[in-house]
Structure formats: structure tokens, C-alpha cells
Length: 149
Image 1 (tube, rainbow, N blue to C red):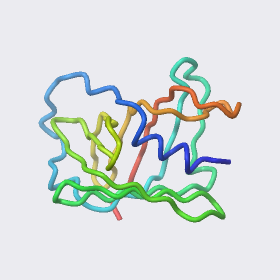
Image 2 (tube, rainbow, N blue to C red):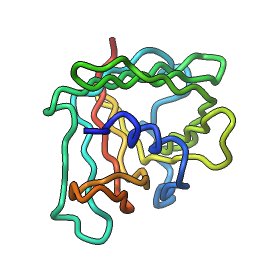
Image 3 (cartoon, rainbow, N blue to C red):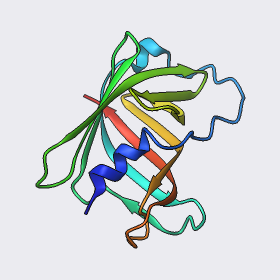
Image 4 (spheres, one colour):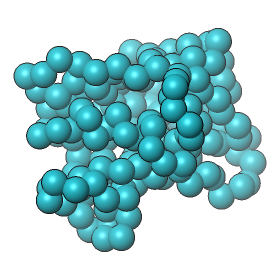
């Protein structure tokens, strides 16, 4: 499975859907977001057929996202039995949206975000991913649940 290569596309190929607009007084600040987060759930849903889904953490993939206070990030993804792959770039947040901008690539990925305790939920990131296993990437929606490490 080429999950690692496809996940790297998460941060580099499409601009995601931004949040619906309202202000969230409980939205996490950039200071609160800074730290290392490990995915407990990373689900891709086919944008044109939301019933087609794949959850890669259940398949043994690990995804760690480190948000540095200075506005840079490091994402490490490791599929079972393979060497990890790392992506770096910059990040920012506003209201309840987290934006990741990978280094050396135009575009960004935006997620609606919420935080409860030590769990950060990111949803609605538009990416390319082979959700249906046909060997071709299709537009997908990425939803993540991460816990602070």
C-alpha cells in the first residue's frame, strides 16, 4: 500500500475547505496548539461518494504532527514495515481553522478544528487519496483526531 506517498499529498496538492465562518470563543490559540500531536484516527472519505472511507491508523500507519510555537510544523508518517516520511512547512490558525503550508509547494490545506482537553480534531481537509483502492487518487476529505504527546 502506498499510503505514505498519498498522505504526503494531503499537505501539498489541494486547498482545503475553510471553516463556515462563525467565531468560536473556545477555539484553541496558537500557543495552545503548539506541541506534538499523534493521530488516533486518520480517515479519508471519497468526496464524491462519502460512503467510501479508509481509516489508516487502524491499518497500522502512524502520523505525528508537531506544531512549533514559531509557526513551523513537521509531519511524520510511517506505514507498517516502512521508513517514515517527513514533511515540513509553516502553520497558522485563526478562529477555528488550522492551515498547513508545506515547504517548497504552492497551496495549503485547511482544516476546521476543535479541541477538547488533550484531543485536537481536524476535519474537512480536501486532499487527493486512493480511497477506493483502484490505484488512482480521487478527491477525498481528511478527518483527523490527534492527542497531545
